[in-house]
Image (cartoon, rainbow, N blue to C red; front, side):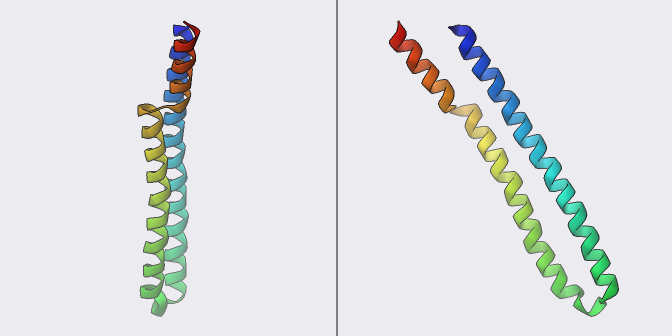
Length: 95
């Protein structure tokens, strides 16, 4: 029975690591594309650079929010895992 709990804890740690790591990779790719497109568009029309910069910062904030939500979900899984709580309840009722 303890093996089940340790498996759940280990797989939760792997899931949290993947959630944070893939969220960071996706955000980095998004920022690279966003910065490249901003530089490209402001080079084509320099008079719109200020307007484009404001829009770029709004999208950058949304990109960061996605990664921070992933970090929050990962920490929630690590601290109060609902699957682990259910397994502990089943173990208590089995004994």
